[in-house]
Picture: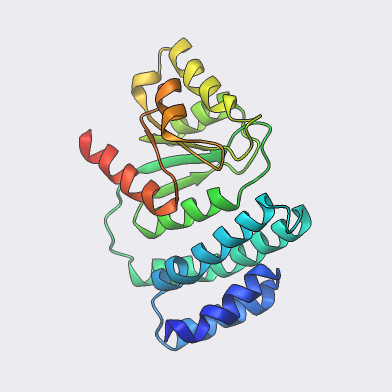
Length: 216
């Protein structure tokens, strides 16, 4: 049944057709398609492809934003379905998530947020262009276990290091696990700045967060 919706829903997201994406999502759910299957089998690949096209200059920021809005609209419906289906799910912990200061790209971050929530994490999504001090303040406010930072552009990648350095300066580095990701980030960078982990994609982020919390 999932295959029936793969192409039309993927196209709706790629073309930024939010209303169509919502309608198709509702139809799929009404026919018994699992919301997690829709996220992992359709939304994640569709948004990944959109992001790749943007980086290859095949599409531009307006198209990227429209695709993100369409995916967000569908995701809202799916998260409601997940919550209704798994109301008794175990709460795995709180994660503060955001795109670092100076960076307005959030499609990848949004995918990570959706998948983490779907696996039982409480996610405090700070959005994009988040300054270092806000990551820390929100992590303290919400008693988070993990701070997760995304950066797509090489010019904004140092903001991840700045946040970790600020944690050290404030004497709070040991209070949180810090993970990083994004198009310009790799494992070597994560190690160089003293992060606790790096995830190449949303699925790896879920695995990493579970591992880090189990290690506590």
